[in-house]
Image 1: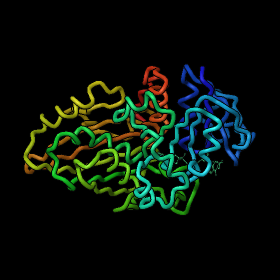
Image 2: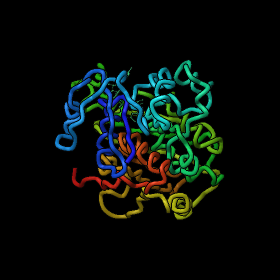
Image 3: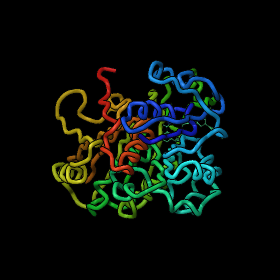
Image 4: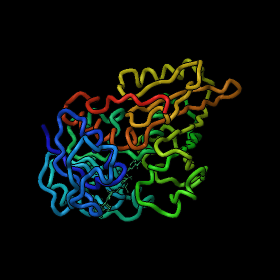
Length: 344
Ligand SMILES: NC(=O)c1ccc[n+]([C@@H]2O[C@H](COP(=O)([O-])OP(=O)(O)OC[C@H]3O[C@@H](n4cnc5c(N)ncnc54)[C@H](OP(=O)(O)O)[C@@H]3O)[C@@H](O)[C@H]2O)c1
């Protein structure tokens, strides 16, 4: 059994991580921090875990040594305290954005000045489908952003194909409210947020940087638009892809099958009948799956590729646990077997 602690455990990402880790056979949770709820039962922040744990929150100052430290902190906090965290655990898995980008200049462009840029190269980007071999020997992992994870997985099989018209990829992301964390703001206030269909980042979404980093130069610049929708959990990306030459839908599916046929958490949705012919985030709540569907436009060299995930699971905590499993040569699916609910 390995001892694991979570820093930033009262938030949505930390709560989802706790839910998954409590059901993991190789893990004991040692400590979980919250400044707001220090010494109170974790079920105060995560009532869904009533009966599953007697744990109480600790403060960051009381953290003891452990085997793996998960960081579920607001952007900018991990980098300031990383030297302290490194002394607490030999392995660190960060859910935040601080160590996702390899290039300091890119970080500065999208987030501002980094306080520990020398460590950017020490972290492995956490998406297993792209970095499985690297993860096996990594001590430090930076999980992908939720919107970025969904977009990267939806596009990855096209990267090596050399058929996509450069600079033409347009990602339209619809995002549920939990992606913004549990700190309330005027934008998240219920009378304002409920029922909204809000275009909040038509351009310059920060995740553009990691999508381009991970997909490389083959697709050129990608164009991301983000819309807040009436969902708590879930992301749906509708990606418009234009090709240099015509390609059949069958050949597109072949690319996706060949890239993902061995992947335990990617499901290719090929159904031709029923209500769920395309990925639907509602079906994925609490699961670690990324569902992907394709429709080729018969009138042009365009395809629409649709991807969906739960932002809190495959988009962060589930991805983190999948990475942890790989780092320890455990079955990649441990703790992540939940298949979702229907209807929900
Ligand atoms: N939400 C998502 O869907 C999602 C998806 C992908 C990635 N992420 C990333 O995951 C990270 C956490 O996101 P979240 O949604 O869980 O945020 P959140 O709900 O706002 O939670 C943040 C947590 O950090 C703690 N915290 C805040 N400032 C702190 C400080 N200075 N020192 C120690 N603890 C501090 C908060 O607890 P106290 O105030 O009680 O101490 C809280 O537990 C972020 O970096 C986010 O970008 C989130």
